[in-house]
Length: 209
Image 1: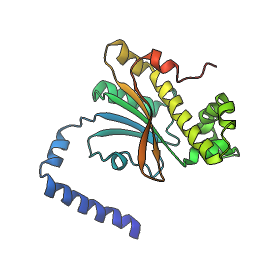
Image 2: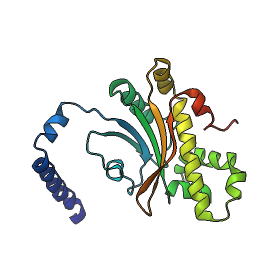
Image 3: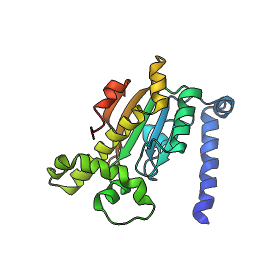
Image 4: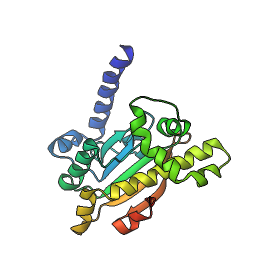
């Protein structure tokens, strides 16, 4: 219970600090949200979108799941995506993976993880499609880091072929798609791909199978 109570203590300290610096902050946020970004990230507790980017509440609309996956059958993600584009008019869609990712390591290592195995199947497809490149990397840690990058590329590619994104592009509205990796050992973000604004540019990110 001590850790749970600490959440409220931290919250009170944070809210008071925000009010001291900007008395109108919460009143502005109460009226509406106008985020610039949709962040599709991993559920890992070490990668909170606002903190690693220095954003404030209201900047980023967030969807997180195990392994920062974009499934075309995931009604949760598709609903978030639709709301972000159709209602909030978000202009930047970010898929962010991270190093030392449990989902990447689980997919790579094989074994049984129950229901999670279904969720990891697309990462295992990424491994299969890129088997030769991954096998040529002698160091396992470097191999996992590359698999993280390849998974981000894959998920950006899948995001680009969702009907919601393609409808936006067809209307002449240009949400830009970006793929990032967060390095947990130093706290830095790096770009894997950025500025994808058409189906043609996205095609190169998806394997031809």
